Length: 210
Image (cartoon, rainbow, N blue to C red; front, top):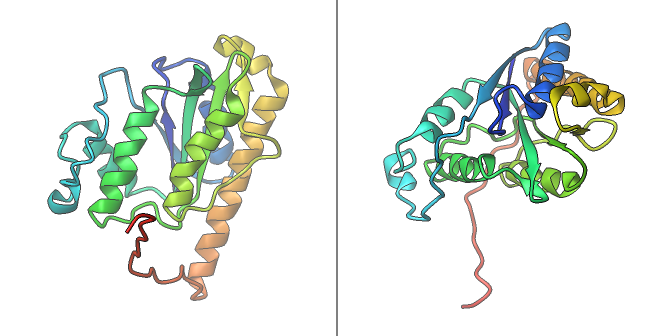
């Protein structure tokens, strides 16, 4: 079993990475493999709402989003990490996830369905809970169980050393990792005895103005 940890910070080895690394280390202790994927700082174009992904089977903007979707299909769970910028998730991760989830869904690739997901954010001070809510919405629209810790999944600090001093935050990263491992192992055992996810229904859309 493998968990993909996504670093949505412009700083490859900054505060967000420090939180994700704590999770990765704890996952390893629980016999779960993981990988940290760095989105990077190259410009991520926003979704154009062209719906071409439904015909092409991938996003029409051929960049790292398509590569990520192919990679993500091989994993069993996901944790998306972001710093807090202007009281919301970063300008790196939001357009990236918009296109990842929309293109995967529209192309009929339900790679995230019933796989567990979680969001982790880092901040100097404020904006954390809103950013977590913002990221959780990707899971909720994709039929993904949301894995929690004992508190909201956040760490505080202006640099990695300060994040490591956030004892409560780092403890919660470890609790989150153990909860993710527990869910994955339960899901694996359920499949062995024939308990499988429910079959999807065809999508129905209702417009409020007819």
